[in-house]
Image 1 (cartoon, rainbow, N blue to C red):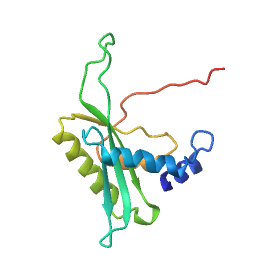
Image 2: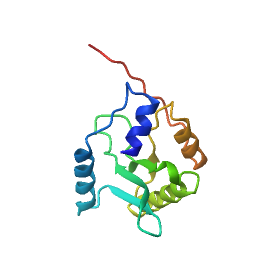
Image 3: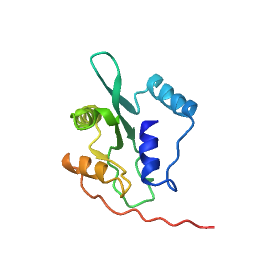
Length: 141
């Protein structure tokens, strides 16, 4: 929920605050998934308070009729609570996500970052993530 609030402050026309129950359902399903398809890793303080998390969401291979080569890939989403930022929590989470992905044969990770989120762009750039293309969009009526 803290992540949604931070993104809403970036652009209220693009982001929203989801219903808490929907967020709880999403993570309950992910954490109960026995297939180990996607991953959720958390960072806790010594007293058990969760201060950050990273999701690793596996991407499907492109359909056979498309020209992109298949590559085992996933998207990462890293979230650190405001009071825990600047302490290395995000870096530790991202490194853990990369190890988790590698252990499952994933060879490419991406992070979909909204261009106005300069802190996230800076964070992922520091960890070797580079511009991987351009996504164009248009609202149609």
